Length: 117
View 1: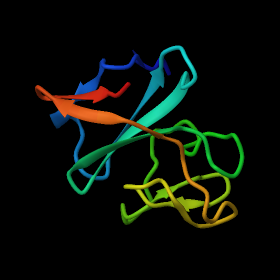
View 2 (view 1 turned 180 degrees about the vertical axis):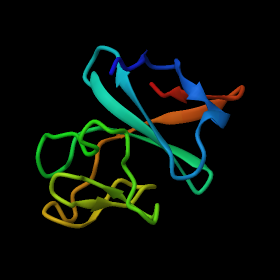
View 3 (view 1 turned 30 degrees about the vertical axis):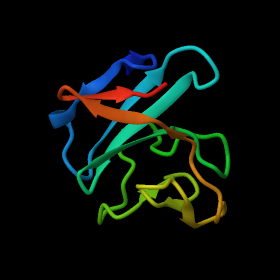
View 4 (view 1 turned 90 degrees about the vertical axis):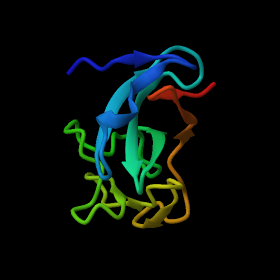
């Protein structure tokens, strides 16, 4: 799957492209934060994280762009079962308890969700 590459200040997607409990993978361009990431909408707000489990350097979704638990209350690593708070990235259950996903800044401007600097 080819992912859209997004740099700081560039749009990830239209703000109305995601509904609560949905996600979108993208690639962060260059610099220290280069690599795969994902954007989620949770309780009407947007959050972005690098797609790397805090327990081991593996993608959370196993390549299916599905990051939420069945009840949409948490993010889950499908490899280890680690569960993360969607709004903070903090692991509250599993092998990396107390660790957190690496958050990426996002803003909503002019109807688009932008990757922050």
